[in-house]
Length: 142
Length: 142
Image (cartoon, rainbow over the protein chains, first blue to last red):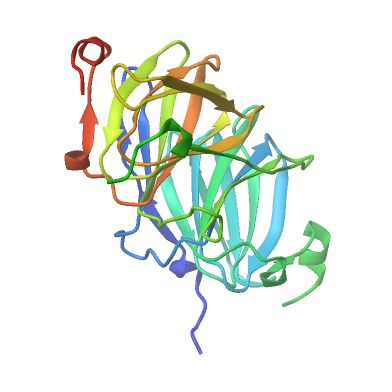
């Protein structure tokens, strides 16, 4: 059995290359430390002050970047556990790598909205994602 | 020898999933027709009315999406060849798959700027990218 820890969530500072016609932002190379595989990539928009979550992937490792706006991610192992928060965005440009079995939610900070890229190591599969409302999350121990 | 054709550039209409807190945009699954491999992903911003290019990759297949703003891509096989233009963006959301050995340039249409995601099948390597200015491109036959 592998002990789950919020310390297993990895932050990677990413390069931004200045260009007078528009900057270039690195995301992830297949040679990066910790790269597992490419399953699927998708964008999620989040409007300012909206909260999405909670979600937990049983199998997928997430790689999250925010190239536009700013998003606060909140992570928990379980209801009573410690929270870890990470706020990333265009001006604080990191990749967050989230291993499976960690609950997460996200709050839009950027005005009017922010863009999140997730590169997952497996295909999206609704059977490997658990969802809980804020209310359920504060009631149900897991 | 494989004959190069601008018809080999493939447009794929991508799904957008409406969500009142912020929509979700599909990008690419590893099971998609034509998916080769994952090498590296990066973002490029482009300011309105700016033109980036021309560039040609000898080895990389590009997968281009524009989740924010709008960008016109221009493709050519050679100086005297036919041009193909494709304009994609948040409101006309497609993935453009560009095989190697095709010259391309891009013009920012969205105001004040637009965001391009490229997922390449190999790592970025400056030795496999050729660049030409607009002036060179109109002088040098290739």
